[in-house]
Image (cartoon, rainbow, N blue to C red; front, side):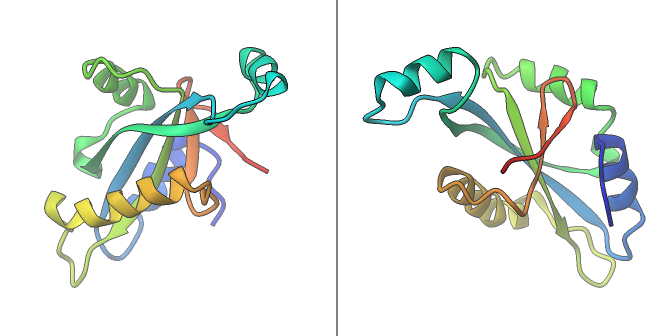
Length: 134
C-alpha cells in the first residue's frame, strides 16, 4: 500500500481489520558530537545533522484530526520539532492497544531513530509534507 499523505495514512489505518494506535516521535535536527567545520556549514544551510527525538505520543484514530491539529497540539508542549515519524501499532482480536501497550514500541522507535534506522516509518515535516530519506 502506497501512502503519500497524512490523510491517506489515517484512511489506511482506519481500513485495517484490527484497530490501530498511531505512534508519533517528534524530532529536531542537531549537530552530531565531534562535528567538522563542513558539517556546521551544511547544517546552517538546512542540510545534515542528526534527528534527535524530543517527544513522543500515541493516539487512536478517534483522537486524531488534521495534520494542522497535530501540529497545534504539539506546540502546547513548548518543544520545537522539524520532523515527526509515525508508525501504527495493531490491536488484536478487535481490541485497541492501550497507551500502556504503546510505551515499549515507542521506546524502540526512539532507539531506532537515534540509530538512524528510520526506513520503517513514515515521516512528515511541520507543513505535513511527507519526507523520503535516502
